[in-house]
Length: 134
Image 1: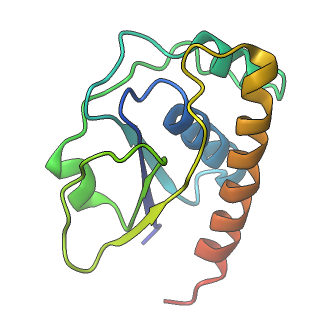
Image 2: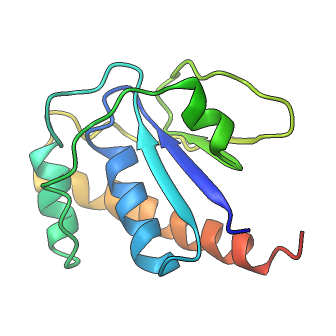
């Protein structure tokens, strides 16, 4: 069974969307990926979309979605994005909190380092998930 990862941030418009897109890209179908937020925005953050476009990834068609208990229940790993988001806690789930700057209202130049930080963390997570014999 392939592992499932859920990325959570308040608006599901920047950090969690970038993380989900990067993990989908690198995992090549070996990991199920979801993202959600407790108060989803109307659209993806344009600067986050532009920063990912520089890597050849397009998130402009993604729609921020509301976090549900079912999302958390389905996930093996739940990653909150340094925003103090409230997330249902289930026994046996692995929770990580990635302290990341918020790209909301930032320029593409300001979002690039956030994207690069997420990229490093996603690559490390993927290596761990795929190397884990459990």
